[in-house]
Amino acid sequence: MGRPGTAGAHHPHPVPTPRASTGTATGGAERAPRIRPASFAQRRLWFLAQLPGANVAYNETIAFSLTGPLDAALLSRAFDALTDRHETLRTRLVATEGDVHQHIDPPGGDSP
Image (cartoon, rainbow, N blue to C red; front, side):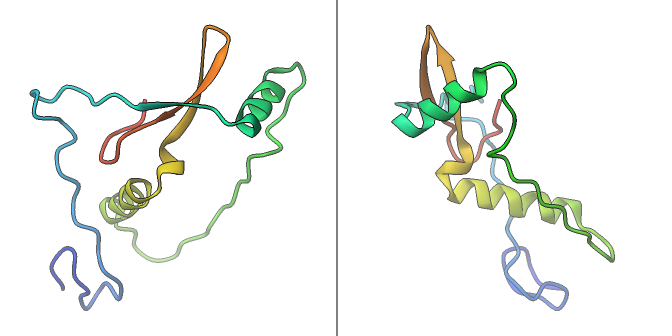
């Protein structure tokens, strides 16, 4: 079997290595998300989602059926690597005092 982070006999593709500690140099204090103004389109979708009878029309669900043994730790590291790489997967819309902002969580951390 290959080393983590390399291709091996059981892993035809590179294997993500375990994530380093998510703590900061301040003794593990959580890193704050970057806060940016929401775009017009984000504000519009957020507003529509607040209306009575709103649905989840913009959410797409997909299910996969996996066969064989599942390495849960490897799958978790793969999703961690994916979210670390793509800022949009770490972005939340948060309403404060009647205004909506993007909260972009830092890579390597757990979202609230």
